[in-house]
Length: 130
Image (cartoon, rainbow, N blue to C red):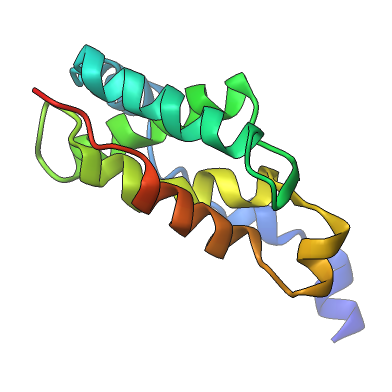
């Protein structure tokens, strides 16, 4: 085993899964997904609510809002839509935001996970109107 694996690199066998142009096209497609102003405001409201939540010592940053919006666009594109809906934002809020949140010591003692806090904030944040 040491002789076989020490003499060659597994990277020599790798072949590209996509071309640069493919990646550029995908990025352009995601950027073309429309986000209505009420959806943008919904993202801002949701992220802002993490910064005023008593169970959180540190809420999500403005950069987190950008990432949530980008991920929502990609999610919509993968779903075959050229527009973002509130469900996209709600579905991705946990995966995009939860690891960026820091619970208070009291919340940690109570084993209040950021994912659960975020789920409650999503329930409380008003959905965007048309």
